[in-house]
Picture 1 (cartoon, one colour):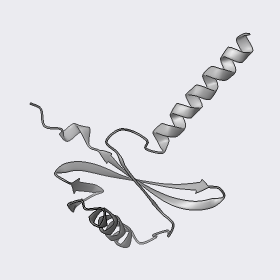
Picture 2: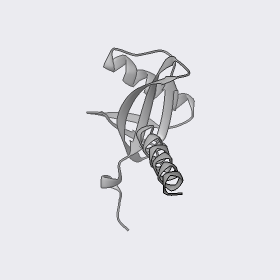
Picture 3: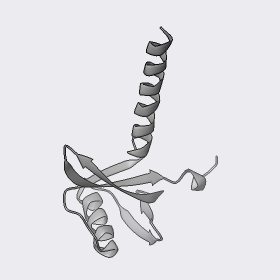
Picture 4: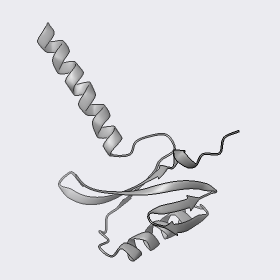
Length: 102
Protein backbone atom coordinates (compact mmCIF):
# COMPACT_ATOMS: atom_id res chain seq x y z
CA UNK A 1 0.00 0.00 0.00
CA UNK A 2 2.83 2.42 0.87
CA UNK A 3 4.55 1.64 -2.41
CA UNK A 4 1.45 2.54 -4.42
CA UNK A 5 0.98 5.82 -2.53
CA UNK A 6 4.67 6.66 -2.98
CA UNK A 7 4.52 5.96 -6.72
CA UNK A 8 1.39 8.11 -7.07
CA UNK A 9 2.97 11.00 -5.15
CA UNK A 10 6.17 10.86 -7.21
CA UNK A 11 4.15 10.74 -10.45
CA UNK A 12 2.10 13.75 -9.38
CA UNK A 13 5.26 15.64 -8.41
CA UNK A 14 6.88 14.89 -11.79
CA UNK A 15 3.72 16.00 -13.60
CA UNK A 16 3.71 19.38 -11.83
CA UNK A 17 7.47 19.80 -12.37
CA UNK A 18 7.08 19.14 -16.10
CA UNK A 19 4.21 21.64 -16.37
CA UNK A 20 6.22 24.27 -14.50
CA UNK A 21 9.28 23.77 -16.73
CA UNK A 22 7.19 23.96 -19.91
CA UNK A 23 5.63 27.26 -18.84
CA UNK A 24 2.04 26.12 -18.41
CA UNK A 25 0.82 28.81 -16.05
CA UNK A 26 -1.97 31.35 -16.15
CA UNK A 27 -0.75 34.56 -17.76
CA UNK A 28 2.14 33.01 -19.70
CA UNK A 29 2.29 33.11 -23.49
CA UNK A 30 3.71 29.98 -25.11
CA UNK A 31 4.91 29.88 -28.73
CA UNK A 32 6.38 26.78 -30.40
CA UNK A 33 8.54 27.32 -33.46
CA UNK A 34 9.24 24.45 -35.85
CA UNK A 35 12.18 26.38 -37.24
CA UNK A 36 15.13 26.83 -34.87
CA UNK A 37 16.53 30.34 -34.61
CA UNK A 38 20.22 30.53 -33.77
CA UNK A 39 20.54 34.28 -34.29
CA UNK A 40 19.02 36.05 -31.28
CA UNK A 41 17.86 39.10 -33.26
CA UNK A 42 16.07 36.92 -35.82
CA UNK A 43 14.46 34.99 -32.97
CA UNK A 44 13.17 38.19 -31.34
CA UNK A 45 11.79 39.40 -34.69
CA UNK A 46 10.03 36.04 -35.22
CA UNK A 47 8.42 36.32 -31.77
CA UNK A 48 7.29 39.88 -32.49
CA UNK A 49 5.88 38.89 -35.89
CA UNK A 50 3.98 35.91 -34.45
CA UNK A 51 2.44 38.01 -31.68
CA UNK A 52 1.54 40.84 -34.08
CA UNK A 53 -0.08 38.30 -36.43
CA UNK A 54 -2.16 37.18 -33.44
CA UNK A 55 -3.37 40.78 -33.03
CA UNK A 56 -1.24 41.80 -30.06
CA UNK A 57 0.63 45.06 -29.56
CA UNK A 58 4.30 44.16 -29.03
CA UNK A 59 7.38 46.16 -28.07
CA UNK A 60 10.78 44.59 -27.32
CA UNK A 61 12.51 46.53 -24.52
CA UNK A 62 15.80 44.62 -24.67
CA UNK A 63 17.44 42.18 -22.24
CA UNK A 64 14.73 39.58 -22.85
CA UNK A 65 11.91 41.90 -21.78
CA UNK A 66 8.77 42.43 -23.84
CA UNK A 67 5.81 44.71 -23.40
CA UNK A 68 2.74 42.96 -24.81
CA UNK A 69 -0.65 44.66 -24.70
CA UNK A 70 0.60 46.97 -21.94
CA UNK A 71 1.94 44.17 -19.69
CA UNK A 72 5.58 43.27 -19.07
CA UNK A 73 6.80 39.78 -19.96
CA UNK A 74 10.13 37.99 -19.52
CA UNK A 75 11.49 35.86 -22.37
CA UNK A 76 12.45 32.24 -21.61
CA UNK A 77 13.68 29.82 -24.27
CA UNK A 78 13.38 26.04 -24.04
CA UNK A 79 14.45 23.45 -26.59
CA UNK A 80 12.31 20.34 -26.19
CA UNK A 81 11.78 17.13 -28.10
CA UNK A 82 8.15 16.46 -28.99
CA UNK A 83 7.71 13.03 -30.50
CA UNK A 84 11.40 12.88 -31.38
CA UNK A 85 11.27 16.20 -33.26
CA UNK A 86 13.15 19.14 -31.71
CA UNK A 87 10.95 22.16 -31.07
CA UNK A 88 12.04 25.61 -29.97
CA UNK A 89 9.59 26.67 -27.25
CA UNK A 90 9.25 30.32 -26.35
CA UNK A 91 7.77 31.13 -22.96
CA UNK A 92 6.82 34.72 -22.28
CA UNK A 93 6.33 34.83 -18.54
CA UNK A 94 4.22 37.59 -17.03
CA UNK A 95 6.59 39.76 -14.97
CA UNK A 96 4.83 39.80 -11.61
CA UNK A 97 7.51 41.99 -10.03
CA UNK A 98 6.25 44.94 -12.10
CA UNK A 99 2.54 44.50 -11.43
CA UNK A 100 0.86 47.73 -10.57
CA UNK A 101 -0.54 47.74 -7.06
CA UNK A 102 -4.02 49.16 -6.62
